[in-house]
Length: 224
Length: 111
Image 1 (cartoon, rainbow over the protein chains, first blue to last red):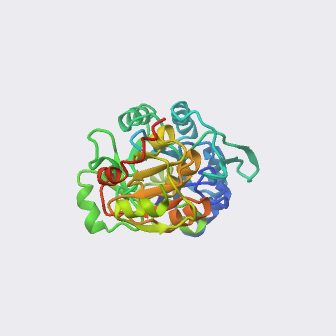
Image 2 (cartoon, rainbow over the protein chains, first blue to last red):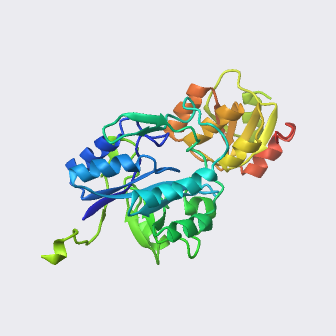
Image 3 (cartoon, rainbow over the protein chains, first blue to last red):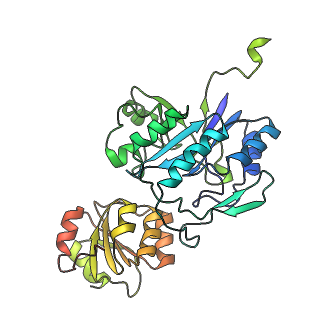
């Protein structure tokens, strides 16, 4: 099964407003994906919408967020359920700067329904790091039953290698390479970790540009 | 201190030119949350954080000049935002410490 495990919706301030959950799911389907993970910056508040879109389209979906930690490292928390992702969102929200987002400076942050009505504009500032460290977030993600990944480790900015110079022990279940990473260079640096590759799409054209393939049975497949 | 004076002192090149850009103080930092919390209005920001969001933070704190160290390139989206928001960018091969030393006549911008 092919998954794009790092996709942003319009809730992310840096994402294109065309990234409604409905459009993302339609694009993923058209591109031949079997599933995706929605991972907005610091928030899973568009996960309920994409859960409904994915259900209607018969697309597998994981729910998560891209947590920008106190070290200003981008990390991915992935969960089976919307409730788990929203529970981590509560913890991240409590650790965000006490500052209101300025849409003119950082971008709009609409929370939407599955059929693309705007519920509200998220007022918290999702473009900044939170006060939780990587070990703090790892503990919370694992306590909630999720997986914790280091995002785009090949990038110089906001990556675990770019910011810390090494991958901390005991925190991550896998590491992600961005779509442009040269595997010959970066796979050795990820030795000992499972490796994913994902689009980190912020606009529709980038959804499913790359994917991660896993040998999984569809639910019910093994019972036949 | 004018943009040209800053460029000359840090031995850099102007990657994004903004007419009239200047600085009356200086702050050194690479974590955007730290910069947002501590950099003061009108400072020159010495950093290696060559990212679009650096411009957003400069807009919030009122910084008109970024000194980008170690010769880090200015990504196109960062350059476009800088030009749009009126934030000049100077790129220098020097380290943050060396660049700050070159600007030692500027007082600290710490809040």
